[in-house]
Image (cartoon, rainbow, N blue to C red):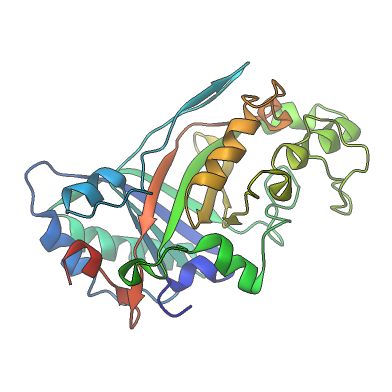
Length: 294
């Protein structure tokens, strides 16, 4: 779809830099976003706006809501909502860094960076645990149907809603488990990625089986590993036509549906969580007409 930000549907890049930004109180945010809209996004950038910023700019987007924190037995899904999210996509880390700096410079009078994270492609798209991430991702037209806005408002056509979480792994805890226990946590064999026929109820693939929800909870996952001096993990990024599918999966993962907590929490936990609306594009540039900023 030519009105969607191309990076949403594109394959994962080799490297990425993620920025989360807050608006400076009293600053001219509209002017800064107009500058950002002059940038040709291509597949290099994906940009999302937080719900408070969208409301402040005058768009009554009922589907857009702040990230909701959740708590289950021995696990927690935190909310760390910010105003702006930028995903810089590149073939090498220096390119990702310079591209992100371009956005920061355009926005510096109205937004400041509160969180920066570098991501990378591991092997063929594996999580650092060694398991394939996003195996059940929809493809082709199904990906478009899952990831992009499905309403009738032409100004929103091609836009998307994205949930972003930084998950921190305890890889030592995972490595201390037997291979069978590791496979049971994920619900797939690490050796060949085949789903276990007798996976336990807490297996991640069972907790998040998209077709098992009512309505079905399909998402387009575009997650990438990260590693720095604070540890390592997965930057979970999931695009949807709304936040409903993501929130349904999170509720089930923490056991709010049936009391069964996702096995993933045995070695990983989310430490951030935020929701953003990714505006459509026109000729490769952000189309902010819905915000009256065109």
